[in-house]
Amino acid sequence: MIILHDDFLTVQIDQMGAELISVKDNESQIEYMWQADSTFWGRHAPILFPIVGRLHDDQYQLQDQTYGLTQHGFARDRDFTVVSQTPTKVILEQRADAETKQKYPFDYQLTVTFELKAHELQVAMTVMNPNQQELPFSIGAHPGFNVPLDTAGGSFTDYQVTVAPKRVYDRIPLSGPYSEVNQQVTDDFRQPKGLNHQAFDQDAKILALNGEETTVMLSSTKDDHGVALHVGGAPYVGIWSPYPKEAPFVCIEPWWGIADPVDHDGNFLTKPGLNRLAANQQFTAAYSISYF
Image (cartoon, rainbow, N blue to C red; front, side, top):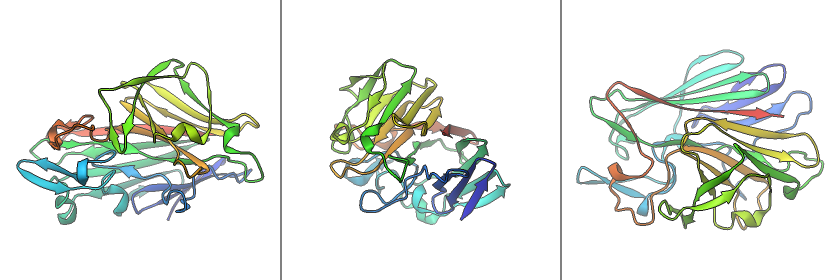
């Protein structure tokens, strides 16, 4: 277990999947991160790579071969090694091996950096292409936050979601686990939206950000506590809580990729939201979370 700390927060990160598993306020001892109760969802904040979302039949075609790859890819279920660590910063790394190439036939180097700065945790996920051939991939984050934060009381419906810039966003519906990228609807975030479980009856709310700097905040209407996730350069953000389980958490998920469209033919190279890295180049997907 990796521990980062400063005067305000203490952070725990698991080397398995480079998964953020705990963020506690040093004074109040509020735990911000969802604690992976498998009754609802047995993860905290998985890293999504080399795909985001689900493939049709959990498989794809590439160069006349078929490969199997389950939802959100495999990086979250594999160990990372520690490259360097200080009290407030750690760099973790995962590389391709024979096992990953059975599912995803590319060399890759995935580096994840966590840096604590006062009340903010900065996260950077960097993919490097050591190949001479192009590297196609998607990547994303999936942090879950306790709602309510106050273990002594409060309820899910005491919280609200605020998105900045305040505007009407294009939203991509899901049909089962697959995206309806050509059937976009709109979602009005000119005002905060109160949380309720019924809002997630069609799974995640996927907002199209088009790379614009965006902040999504979960906050209580009863006190001053909450979280704010800030991202720049991401095409999508998902907001999700399981339904109909009425789980006491919400995920805010910056994505550089998306699930297969309903009508996708399975060709990996025509998958929407795919990033492509030239030989010896790198791509960084970064976001930050402020805790208050």
